[in-house]
Image (cartoon, rainbow, N blue to C red):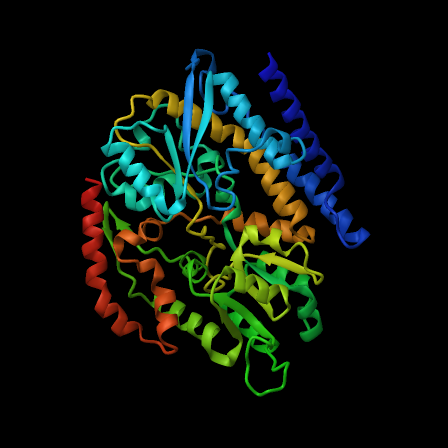
Length: 494
């Protein structure tokens, strides 16, 4: 009875805050923007689907596991622990933490489980998973591991196939069905890692671009609404990014040498941020025809992509290349770059900026591309289950209900309150976040890249080592090894 009261109290708090957000909108700089924000929030709230027990298609009346449910979490990755484990006292004052805790209490109450959390450093998570199998330890039911590490574990024959776990309906929206997550990550009918609304990082780790509104209007004849409208009209392309960036670069300190003290049209760093242009340009690393998989990137589209990125990064002196996330964030916050590439979660770090900013998706390769596409950074959460478990019914029921309740509560709390309500400055940025999130792309070649000789790092490799187009020689030297690795990958899924 006491647990039921706690669930109701927390759920009431979460839903009340979401309702207030929908009716009032977020803080904004003008009454006009406030009105637009409130209207858009009401529209978004009206469209938000509420989950009922029947939606997740579980017969909840038959479950009472009367046991613990243990999850392995990453202790040193920001947000990875807090996706599931929150302090009850802190949850009373934070809508996202409140949603996480109310979700946990609800699942515990309905299914008769008690959540237990084990923590491990991200660098040690693969060893912990392997030891769980080889040592027969049975330490946890589900491991919540980095998407950078999960694909490596899938090829080692130590994980359960999610298609064999009863109760998990991978056609549901909370398992990324809009982006065909399961279909795109499965190979030969086997799926060893999944993600979805149960993880807030799957929302927050989506990659995007930011632009400085004040710099735009001071140093160009464009207004922020012009950029938004180009996105909405499908005209936001790499050529437009190159064109606008070129006109905004200037030698501010007057020493005739462009450096970190000057103003640049664009900023980027050579990591997952540049890799994400595979998705942005709608380029698949692995192609499948009649069940046959190949890697053949020597296409006109790929050649054009490399040429465009080379122009963006090195020609016209319009792009300043920073070394890491922190450097890029600070470069943008200190008004040295008009555009920067980053994660959707970066918006929270920009809240203290005095100048105004907007959020937009990565550009398309050209206007004929059907839609904007989005990658997630490599540290979002994948859920995996170790071989040999006898608890598949419990795992399936818990994960399905966890995903369904997340779609109802934690995702709206994080997405609408933190990202939209607290971290953006205008209603049109909210529409951009929807565009970014709707374009999530899960592609085999990108996710399994480490097992394929790292073809997902082609853009960063070429741009980091040369300022000229050397694609022909690069592809000639690497194409065979990619396909040899692909054959080995396919063999592990046979």
